[in-house]
Image (cartoon, rainbow, N blue to C red):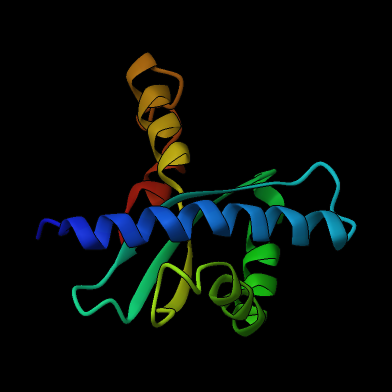
Length: 131
């Protein structure tokens, strides 16, 4: 279903403020060389839940950082509420997810170029199966 203008506006406000909060937290936490970007924020129709999709570079630290972010969701939400208190009445609940669309696109490009050939390497078929 298409998002309303209000949902899109709240999503973009949250996205821009989340970038600042997460980048500052990563820098203050001593994580140099880690890039956290907020690729998308989807807000539900009743504006109570915001799904936040993160792209974390390097990829090998993504799961570890996502767990840390989920553990600190309450403090992140509080900081966002302080930043947006003049724009939003209530801060939506935040749920964080890894955005793996870039890896997915890279896999498709590799397959189209013939770099990942499942006929020559049958082990690739296990990676392609959806669970």
